Image (tube, rainbow, N blue to C red; front, side, top):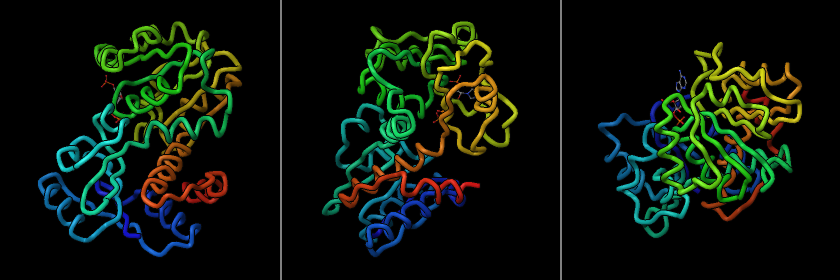
Length: 275
Ligand code: ATR
């Protein structure tokens, strides 16, 4: 199996570690390589990767949208999201997928089996690329309510319009969300606030949550963000961001190889690697 990752910067990516572990676990030969490339060389890099007879590759920032014109086919999630994180090469044809949203939901349900169903009220903080994937995956799964709060409220509204999700979703300012937190069963933090090197910041205060609330942060560096620390102080249930990373990779590996993997067998080693 010849696999890899295209993006910039990717020198500190954990994907090679995850996929090389997956290859080992499934007793498959091959390697997962980094194809770091700056914007002006992106087109050449895609051609280069294709010419190497690669079986599949991941796409990360800043190319998840930019890769679309090079693909021959898109799966439903990738088409809907307009962004691709996984490409499978079949007889020289490039097929694009997006495993970020389903990876997130799988990591959440692995930890809290009852986290998402039609009785649940969900709040997503942020309306960027990550929020888009998660919003799509949760709306598809079926949920009672799923509001979007964002610094730029127009972007939250656009996401709801794009997904025609008006019956289950409302766009809010961060302040409006903060003032009404007790109504939510699950709060998902997807903004870049709290990500190193700005780890002392949180997008909203969690003083309004209840003990039963699940508070989830997709930031995984640091693993326990200040947002999660505040949730912990309130006695809430926590969900860390690194699970999404592992699960989106496991889905990608399954697309490339047909092999499925139980994430729990890798979680401890992965957490150790993250520290
Ligand atoms: P990603 O692909 O990781 O989601 P993105 O598309 O750049 O990244 O989105 C970043 C998200 O973090 C957005 O929701 C952004 O809010 P805006 O839409 O208003 O830009 C949010 N964000 C970034 N910095 C922020 C800050 N200082 N305060 C509040 N929200 C912030």
